[in-house]
Length: 300
Image (cartoon, rainbow, N blue to C red):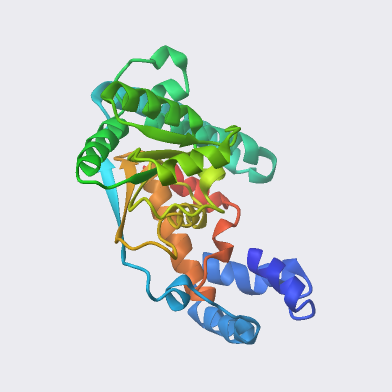
């Protein structure tokens, strides 16, 4: 329905009623995969669209390579995750039946599952020290090697608690870093310190650093936790892959195997595919999660 919101501004008479738009276009395309209805919608909105992609405008940009790096939870971490998932799944599926009334409770529970995929201590302090985070192990291994080769990396997470765990590990390993989140007071100083300094790692919370920054000093990007809005991730990645970058950019998305994170990645791909087919653009990728989306995240 984000598309309807845009159309209501640029062509208010084209689809005046949101309910009718949902019934005539959104449901057949999103729910039923109606190719004919999709083609008709694209023809109707084409005269209203002007798309200028980065690839078309900044043709001199070096290539960007993206890959998913899947990690296995340590056994004790796995046991905690599986136990929590089994306890919560049926309760959540029941809440989803009345999504309008229970949306916040469902999203809180899914956020807890996503945090459990990173480190159990993010959900309950009693799990502190239970096991090393497999993602932190993988990240440290990669940045140690990259720093030795003269590369620099941006590291994004939505969870400042997890970034704190990463900070402690980097300090223990003697790896220099800069840090930025929404509470950082000297934001400009931290950005300048990374640009002008030699620290190989810049830890950034996704919301604080997902837009408005140019950090082409880095040529590697690590996304520590996937989000169901792929447009937000793309904006973060583009802090490094933008005009002024002279090196190829390598992007790693770290995903915990057999967790809700794999379902989030699959959901991202479905959303990308849908909106590429409709408008060839990601502006509507941030639409609210539907009940079917949420059930998919909890499926076996």
